[in-house]
Image: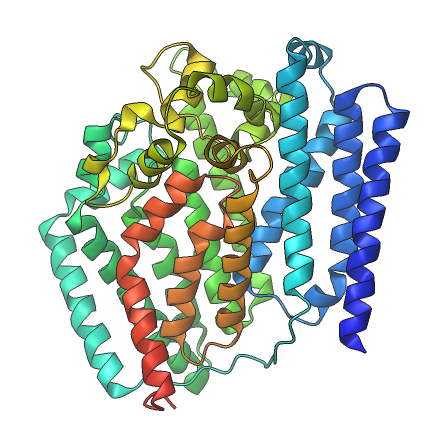
Length: 465
């Protein structure tokens, strides 16, 4: 009965979405107005039908984060564009009709395929239960403790890592120059080991604090846990202040989920968001510009900034131009270059000068000096697979996100819980990044994948039960 109900709900959603698209396209002659209204209405309907899943706690941290990004990209940005629409921007969009129509098709295809993929995956029945953590086995603890000791030794030996990250996050210092040599240096064997030990160290602290708190109910253990996870951002291997500080939010979400502490989480979440805005001002303002003048400018260009960070239409509009520039190259060759550009130890097998990253930035700056703008995932999909299969990567990552989120809800111990979240986090924000960044992040977390496989095998042999 429930399965049939979900089938009907999915069909109604598809038919309603198609009707909205056709109606808005016919009724509004302005393509961008039709696009924004359709995006708002379809997203609203999608999340309205998802309320039951959310209320019955059938989604975990990874899916919450993914949904948050979907809301910003497909509802908030179009809404702001309608309210604060820029006439000049619309004129720029319409200068090249072919590029505009391609961008609209790519935008719609990604939105619909991701929403429908989620609906199809929800047809599968899962057994849900409230998470009740048990202590890790002694053999697992010994391994984690040993790894944590190594993490502390590495920190003492290479304390300049922390100092560089502190200056990078809080001040105007640059963390490298963004070149392939810098990426190769940053994504090396030591990076994988360091990240591996860092996450295991967090697992040790969190498990200790949680069971101490559960036994004594002393608030100091919870505060210590929050503090450790907040300070953890200074150990993150990141390329931008925003990407590093987004980790702060996921760390806070981990503690909130474990302790079921909504009040503290809301306070710290607001502080985190303010901190992200602050470092954004620091990054984007220059020494000759007054801070308050820049703040005003940032507010006035809110749509532009959101589109840059969430792969909006401004970035997707470059698909046709990038496609023309890469027309003479083998698509498999471009895919290989993109895939391994940020992957630890394998950056050298990639021809970085022949990537979507380089050519996408060329369409913006008209030179090859800067490569700091993020290529949208859907644009990369279009370059690799063409217009009809452009959403293939987005569908694949959506499937993986929902699968990992189910594993989070079925976690039996804190180690497993944290490892799955850290593994799934880069995937959950794929609409803010792209295939190159996601695959690079998964490469850095290759140690986590090995541990998770070991945990699954141990669970099957009942050693963790």
